[in-house]
Image (cartoon, rainbow, N blue to C red):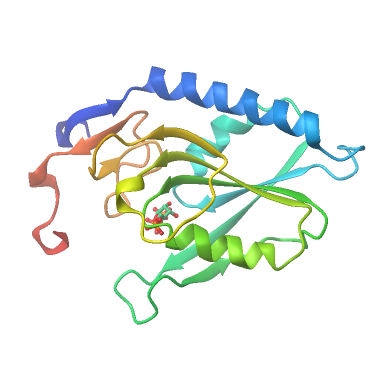
Length: 190
Ligand code: PRP
């Protein structure tokens, strides 16, 4: 697969170092602010499928606090008729009333996906709702969204793959984040 990559933006070592820092910081923050009995009502980490999976798997292993995790799967109406809305394909397994919730994303781009998910979860009366994203692409933002933890801000408006991020469902298993060579991007998608 390496032949498809033009350049690496974040190496495996850079990613792992940053993810470890983030995990430790998040755990510390929840230790300081969490409910009195974190074993009774632990933090619920919510991954947004599919892109967040590798990041979340690494992140939680640096979080030394009691936690549960679950996933939401959404489908964006990217070229559809309802701009900014997302359809829930898989919802959370249980109610989240009075729970601390941490949403984990791989990337925040226009912000529409996150805004829609935040609105839905906020309406379910969580005790708190925070967001952690591995990548932030502020140049592309169309709607404002609150983000509590950011791994890396992308320094330029490039389309990246790897470590969960795909192009046509491929490249999610790369251990680094990089840019595809133009010849590996199908003309129909440009
Ligand atoms: C990606 C990413 C975010 C969303 C961000 O998901 O994982 O959920 O796009 O884009 P936005 O800020 O412009 O809404 P995608 O729909 O590509 O699905 P995937 O996670 O399965 O790759």
